[in-house]
Image (cartoon, rainbow, N blue to C red; front, side):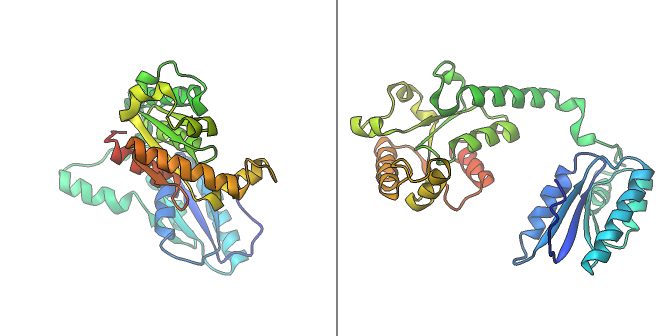
Length: 277
């Protein structure tokens, strides 16, 4: 994550890791979302795998603490003991996310952990990694109804009007869960016929619908085609109403994406269709 400077900020939050830092950032975000009205500068520092880098991190933490007038918060998934020792000595509120859980697990299992750097991204994940790459390629090839070939291999086919969030949801399902997700737009011609696109009926058990409020859809479409009929509130209202009516009539499970994150949408899709990512 880039250093989103430009303040003023209430405080600086660091996500520090000897790996990518994604685990620290994800866990830290989950905790910080419990607190409202905070203006935080967030900085991810990945691949802190030498003592020199660790000392540099300590200096950066100190500099931001001095600039903010408040000690920074540090979420760490550092594994090497010496590097962890150096960074934990910084003038900050330090949360060691691994040690908080590793020690109790060692006690529960009756054995020592490996304390190995990058253990969560080893060759043991090769099959899962390959599955995700294949899912990403599948989703890209089947984005926006551009290909009907191979739909039999889809785990899910998302349907909905244009700009409702089908593509980002498809890619998230592929990248995070290895789900082969295709998506297909519902267009005015479908509403005039009163039917789904013909090729989708044989895959009806794989369909999941996405909708959105007309007001939000108009905002999104105006960013792409300002002042067009496509983006007009009147047209958005008509398309959303017809799409939702079609999904109800066809018995397709669906949800509104208006106030939901991509993570929430994807989790709902997995749960409703009983997919195992």
